Image (cartoon, rainbow, N blue to C red; front, top):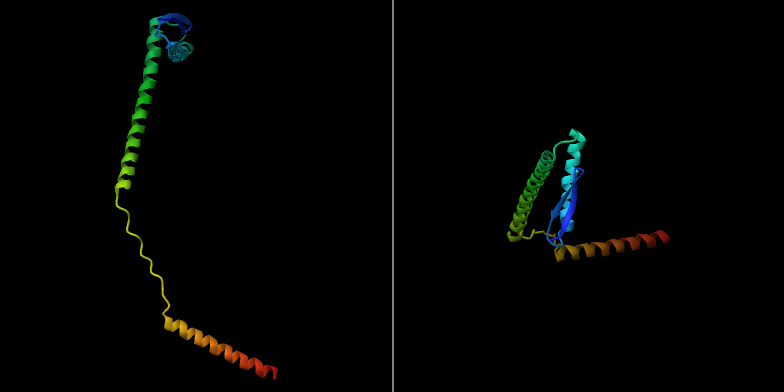
Length: 131
Protein backbone atom coordinates (compact mmCIF):
# COMPACT_ATOMS: atom_id res chain seq x y z
CA UNK A 1 0.00 0.00 0.00
CA UNK A 2 1.44 3.33 -1.00
CA UNK A 3 1.71 6.04 1.61
CA UNK A 4 0.83 9.58 0.54
CA UNK A 5 1.40 12.82 2.40
CA UNK A 6 -1.59 15.12 2.16
CA UNK A 7 -1.77 18.70 3.39
CA UNK A 8 -4.87 20.00 5.13
CA UNK A 9 -5.00 23.37 6.79
CA UNK A 10 -1.25 23.81 6.46
CA UNK A 11 -0.54 20.52 8.25
CA UNK A 12 0.83 17.35 6.69
CA UNK A 13 -0.70 13.92 7.22
CA UNK A 14 0.68 10.57 6.08
CA UNK A 15 -2.13 8.41 4.73
CA UNK A 16 -2.09 4.94 3.17
CA UNK A 17 -4.21 4.03 0.18
CA UNK A 18 -4.57 1.27 -2.38
CA UNK A 19 -2.40 1.15 -5.46
CA UNK A 20 -3.73 3.48 -8.14
CA UNK A 21 -5.85 5.54 -5.74
CA UNK A 22 -3.23 8.16 -5.01
CA UNK A 23 -4.77 10.76 -7.33
CA UNK A 24 -8.24 10.23 -5.84
CA UNK A 25 -6.82 10.64 -2.36
CA UNK A 26 -5.04 13.85 -3.35
CA UNK A 27 -8.27 15.20 -4.93
CA UNK A 28 -10.29 14.38 -1.79
CA UNK A 29 -7.60 15.95 0.40
CA UNK A 30 -7.72 19.09 -1.75
CA UNK A 31 -11.47 19.39 -1.14
CA UNK A 32 -10.94 19.04 2.61
CA UNK A 33 -8.01 21.47 2.52
CA UNK A 34 -10.11 24.07 0.65
CA UNK A 35 -12.74 23.91 3.41
CA UNK A 36 -10.06 24.04 6.11
CA UNK A 37 -8.60 27.12 4.43
CA UNK A 38 -12.00 28.85 4.56
CA UNK A 39 -12.22 28.06 8.28
CA UNK A 40 -8.67 29.24 8.88
CA UNK A 41 -9.34 32.51 7.03
CA UNK A 42 -12.52 33.12 9.05
CA UNK A 43 -11.55 31.90 12.50
CA UNK A 44 -7.77 31.85 12.58
CA UNK A 45 -5.76 29.01 14.06
CA UNK A 46 -7.71 26.27 15.83
CA UNK A 47 -6.97 22.80 17.19
CA UNK A 48 -6.35 20.20 14.48
CA UNK A 49 -9.25 17.95 15.49
CA UNK A 50 -11.71 20.86 15.48
CA UNK A 51 -10.47 22.10 12.10
CA UNK A 52 -10.82 18.64 10.56
CA UNK A 53 -14.25 18.15 12.13
CA UNK A 54 -15.56 21.51 10.90
CA UNK A 55 -14.07 21.08 7.40
CA UNK A 56 -15.60 17.58 7.19
CA UNK A 57 -19.00 18.91 8.28
CA UNK A 58 -18.83 21.67 5.68
CA UNK A 59 -18.07 19.09 2.97
CA UNK A 60 -20.88 16.85 4.25
CA UNK A 61 -23.28 19.80 4.03
CA UNK A 62 -22.25 20.51 0.44
CA UNK A 63 -22.57 16.81 -0.40
CA UNK A 64 -26.06 16.64 1.11
CA UNK A 65 -27.10 19.67 -0.97
CA UNK A 66 -25.73 18.06 -4.13
CA UNK A 67 -27.55 14.81 -3.33
CA UNK A 68 -30.84 16.70 -2.91
CA UNK A 69 -30.34 18.44 -6.26
CA UNK A 70 -29.43 15.12 -7.88
CA UNK A 71 -32.55 13.44 -6.47
CA UNK A 72 -34.70 16.31 -7.72
CA UNK A 73 -33.09 16.03 -11.16
CA UNK A 74 -33.58 12.25 -11.19
CA UNK A 75 -37.24 12.69 -10.24
CA UNK A 76 -37.68 15.22 -13.06
CA UNK A 77 -35.98 12.86 -15.52
CA UNK A 78 -38.33 10.06 -14.39
CA UNK A 79 -41.34 12.35 -14.97
CA UNK A 80 -40.14 13.29 -18.44
CA UNK A 81 -39.43 9.65 -19.31
CA UNK A 82 -42.90 8.63 -18.10
CA UNK A 83 -44.50 11.37 -20.20
CA UNK A 84 -42.40 10.34 -23.20
CA UNK A 85 -43.44 6.69 -22.76
CA UNK A 86 -47.08 7.76 -22.42
CA UNK A 87 -46.87 9.77 -25.63
CA UNK A 88 -45.12 6.94 -27.47
CA UNK A 89 -47.75 4.40 -26.42
CA UNK A 90 -50.74 6.65 -27.11
CA UNK A 91 -52.70 5.86 -30.26
CA UNK A 92 -51.97 8.04 -33.23
CA UNK A 93 -54.48 10.83 -33.73
CA UNK A 94 -57.09 10.41 -36.43
CA UNK A 95 -55.98 12.03 -39.66
CA UNK A 96 -57.59 15.41 -40.15
CA UNK A 97 -60.23 15.34 -42.82
CA UNK A 98 -59.81 18.07 -45.39
CA UNK A 99 -62.54 18.68 -47.91
CA UNK A 100 -61.57 20.16 -51.24
CA UNK A 101 -64.19 21.75 -53.45
CA UNK A 102 -64.70 19.86 -56.67
CA UNK A 103 -65.91 21.76 -59.70
CA UNK A 104 -68.51 19.65 -61.49
CA UNK A 105 -67.81 18.96 -65.20
CA UNK A 106 -71.00 20.78 -66.22
CA UNK A 107 -69.68 24.02 -64.70
CA UNK A 108 -66.34 23.56 -66.48
CA UNK A 109 -68.13 22.98 -69.78
CA UNK A 110 -70.35 26.04 -69.27
CA UNK A 111 -67.34 28.23 -68.46
CA UNK A 112 -65.52 26.99 -71.59
CA UNK A 113 -68.59 27.78 -73.70
CA UNK A 114 -68.86 31.28 -72.19
CA UNK A 115 -65.16 31.90 -72.89
CA UNK A 116 -65.61 30.84 -76.51
CA UNK A 117 -68.60 33.19 -76.91
CA UNK A 118 -66.65 36.06 -75.31
CA UNK A 119 -63.77 35.48 -77.73
CA UNK A 120 -66.20 35.45 -80.67
CA UNK A 121 -67.80 38.72 -79.52
CA UNK A 122 -64.33 40.24 -79.08
CA UNK A 123 -63.37 39.16 -82.59
CA UNK A 124 -66.51 40.78 -84.04
CA UNK A 125 -65.83 44.02 -82.14
CA UNK A 126 -62.21 44.09 -83.33
CA UNK A 127 -63.32 43.54 -86.93
CA UNK A 128 -65.87 46.38 -86.75
CA UNK A 129 -63.26 48.64 -85.11
CA UNK A 130 -60.91 48.10 -88.06
CA UNK A 131 -63.38 48.62 -90.49
